[in-house]
Length: 492
Image (cartoon, rainbow, N blue to C red; front, side, top):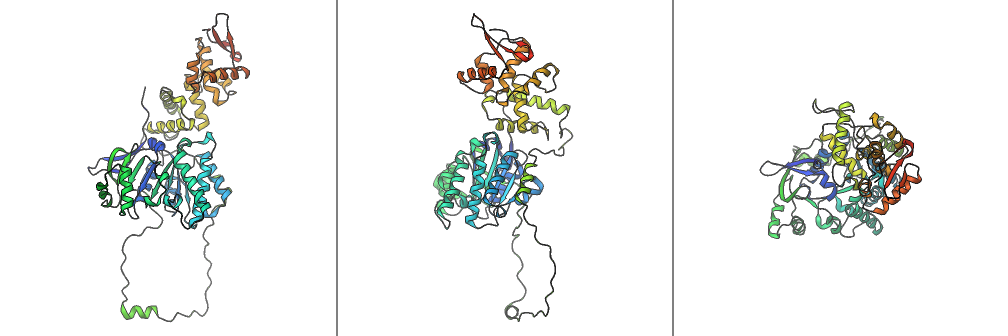
């Protein structure tokens, strides 16, 4: 049995030059806290993380400064201007984002502080309230998290603070079961609500100078207080990392280069004007120029933000796994005969793993997508609904949809609901092969349950749906028949 595929990205290098990575699959289960004073390279770190993982997992960025909107063109993120939409529209957009697995940047730089908190709270709550079938894995990056989860009351109303805190708490405390992996970044640990920060299991700590922040950072990294001075001496772009997705022991990492940058970047010092003393005084106190007749010129107005319906359509048309140019001649961009063989191989790997049927379909689908990319397939052409049926077929040993040996069975399977398809196919496959009836334990493993009562109810449901016939002879031996195929398992 093969091990689970690891989807890791390289964040930078340690002092010896060895690469330091983050296991994205582990990160989805354990969350991340990034801390660093202004100028420590915190936003650079988040940008590196987003760029390197863009092809692996859906990304949702809460961006209070509008720094990450530049991800849109090279990486396909949809930019949502939070100032342009009402609360109901923001909730509707968030719901579509979960449905269509679109990577987005929610830009809040056009809003005042209280409006930022209210908008982010409604957006996060709508993500959190998505139906169970849409609990796809996603990284939810919240920059300047102390704004949305403040440790103490500030200049905003108590109502808004409660709304924002509740949304952030749901993200960090309960989001994992819904596929939402919180990544929060803050300038000041002391200003961030402790019960929100405490839910992270991975940490990247950058330069900080205040004793209270250094003490909290040292506690999270498991360092002694006297060792906390090392945090004060970190250079820009250097962080101390710890956690199951990074390293089991604290590791120093210098964050690598990025491909994009913020819209406004201060490049450093600029030469001062050459005018000095009396000359500068004369410039400042000069009489204003009199313009006899102002010349009116038409100028191009700034483009208005797209209407909510337009943005909803853009999200609906988003392709979470777009075809890409092959990285090398061995990468296959579109489904074809060779791709179909690899898809069958990947499905076989997944169903061979113990406990796979007890995982959520969305989590299995993410694993399937990553494995396909590891096999150099840029686009497998299988969505979640199709994957659920292919996974059920693979559990029954049916690896191809066009297999002529199972044409009648697969035609019948179109009438079977997805949630009971796997056990039905296992029963039908046994009947086709003339094998004994699968016992309750075997059906329970396929159905993803440990309850014998659920298997009895499952068989009763399938019989009432006229998909199977249960027959028990006087000797207590059970056989299961498939009426539409005219076949039955061997009694046992």
